Length: 325
Ligand SMILES: NC(=O)c1ccc[n+]([C@@H]2O[C@H](COP(=O)([O-])OP(=O)(O)OC[C@H]3O[C@@H](n4cnc5c(N)ncnc54)[C@H](OP(=O)(O)O)[C@@H]3O)[C@@H](O)[C@H]2O)c1
Image (cartoon, rainbow, N blue to C red):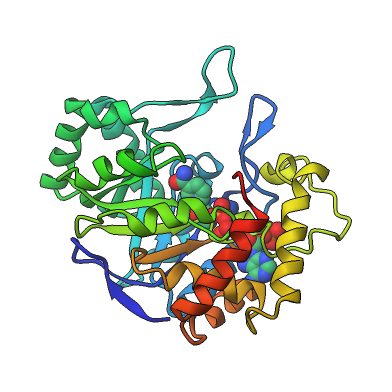
């Protein structure tokens, strides 16, 4: 896997990183799962990533409520030249009377949560600490930024990032996050599933910061056969997104992708290259449920780059199929 220097950092990372949300299994909160079916071989997936040359690992204290960090701590302990990132601020409980997760970006919480993450990760520092899904109000919270600077000064964190939700990762809001002096890296959802948002990211001024793409396979739904009958397990957060009524646009996309002959690439290769060949995207983090899936993703990274013409055609197909999203 190719490596790149992440803009505005000293981190040299593989262009594809291993996302570990799914490796923490089901994340049960008040009877709702915000996780994934338990992967059969999570340790082997992380080992396979290392064997394939992936040195970039994306984590959060939220994933499996600490389980994903513990897994990385077990497998990566003592491995040199790897980049371990985690996130802070998203809490495993809902705001009273809602299905919105609580968030805490107070200085006290960040300091305490990072200490717990370091214990689970078995590290004395993280390479990149993201705020996990901050609202735009956090841009103004001076105590949050003072604490992040303090953690950097203390050597507990090498770089600061923000992992943004949908409304924060477009237009003027995205521009404000990218312009924050302490923020080196912005992570956001970027995929063929949401082509208009991808276009928005393509046009933003990066301020020489690194933008990392996530959910590039739309949690795998872009790759599955949308016509195949399949029930999704109770513990799988995707079951709402896989309802009958939401399959129509996926069917249109798959048919147009195949029938127009616009691309000789598999859907997986097309989805991965659409993201990593974007001029504004530095790297992508991808989730997998088996080692073989990871091998296919890495193979897609080794495929020929997507030309601007091919990209325009595939983008057009996605924009038609997913119009309105
Ligand atoms: N707010 C945030 O900060 C945030 C939010 C979301 C994600 N993330 C990060 O981004 C990472 C990746 O995002 P994601 O997990 O949402 O979605 P993703 O990478 O778009 O999709 C992952 C799913 O795609 C399927 N897949 C992967 N490789 C495949 C292959 N070769 N062939 C067929 N299917 C394949 C698998 O589905 P099956 O399980 O069905 O096999 C896998 O679980 C997460 O692990 C996490 O680290 C961060």
